Amino acid sequence: MASCGKYMLTISLICLIIAECDSSFVKLKCNSHNHGRFGHQSLLECIVTPSKEAEDAKILRVIWMKEGAESALIDTTKLPFEPRFTLAEPEWKKHNRNISMLVMNTKIADIGNYRCTVESDSGDDTVLISLSVSDPYGPPTISFEEKKMILTCKASGGFPEGRIHWFDEHKSNWTRSAKQDAIKTEDGRFNLTSRMELLAGSLMSKYTCAVYNSSGGREGEDHYELLPSVSTHEGSLQTSDLAKKIVIPVVFIGAVIIGLLLRIMGPTITNSVLHNNNVHQLWLDTLYSLFSFSYTSLMAGPTEMS
Ligand SMILES: *[C@@H]1O[C@H](CO)[C@@H](O)[C@H](O)[C@H]1NC(C)=O
Ligand SMILES: *[C@@H]1O[C@H](CO)[C@@H](O)[C@H](O)[C@H]1NC(C)=O
Ligand SMILES: *[C@@H]1O[C@H](CO)[C@@H](O)[C@H](O)[C@H]1NC(C)=O
Ligand SMILES: *[C@@H]1O[C@H](CO)[C@@H](O)[C@H](O)[C@H]1NC(C)=O
Image (cartoon, rainbow, N blue to C red):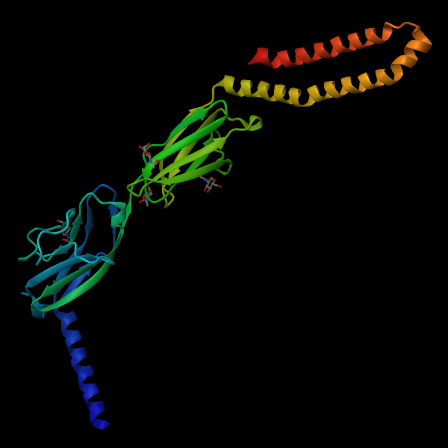
């Protein structure tokens, strides 16, 4: 038992010393959070920093891998590298210890964690670092569907998902009245569409839509001025709609009631008071012309206006 314990202790000590050696002679100093822009070059920064004892440490191998991937993007013992990936400093081998990786034409799929490994004659080191990617949205554009009274604001090709906000000329926030859709494009970015239905009672003369990126930065805006005719046209449409909805049923029901009353009362009236058989027909004719006149004038009114 005692000898077994001694063995364990010795092995642990050796391990400790090796670990100490590894980390003390060659170390990687990396930028732990790197940021790139879609379609541009992104730099993942790592520098080899040997300790004083290993100032002349010779770099034997550099490996860059994306976490989760099977094969390396860059392996200095296996040329060529993956397309779009290269070492930032071509002269890294000699005195230059800058082994940063450059990503060309950065894609949304490049977002993730990367493992940088250096092997040298004085020890190895590995560091895990991240890359995030963003892209500002294109300038937003507003369009207006007059028939449906809907304002639409579109901003395309941004990342991460942003928000479109609406304001009027008094800078009041109308965003709650709008509905936003974000569609993923083939390249992984977003197209934003925000629709806002305008209501007759609360029309403003000028609307602004503004695109905000995921961290709340305002990126672009567009303005739309409603023509004065839109609001007046909308106003008259609303009244005429109201007229059609309320007055027409009232006229119709009125006619039915009077017609029924005549059916019941008519013979009594004609027999007892007027003593004339044609009076019943006369009453009906008069009432009919009266109601048809009011009905046609109601229907004609709004049509002339629009
Ligand atoms: C490493 O090289 C890249 C590309 O030349 C450069 O942009 C970066 O600043 C260098 N990093 C350091 C710490 O020198
Ligand atoms: C506008 O309103 C939206 C939704 O309520 C809100 O998320 C946003 O922060 C507001 N923007 C400003 C500038 O007040
Ligand atoms: C996103 O918007 C761009 C520019 O308007 C357009 O060309 C593209 O087809 C849109 N993509 C999708 C998936 O809607
Ligand atoms: C959002 O916009 C602000 C201001 O323009 C900028 O500083 C920030 O980096 C942007 N964030 C993203 C994720 O694009």
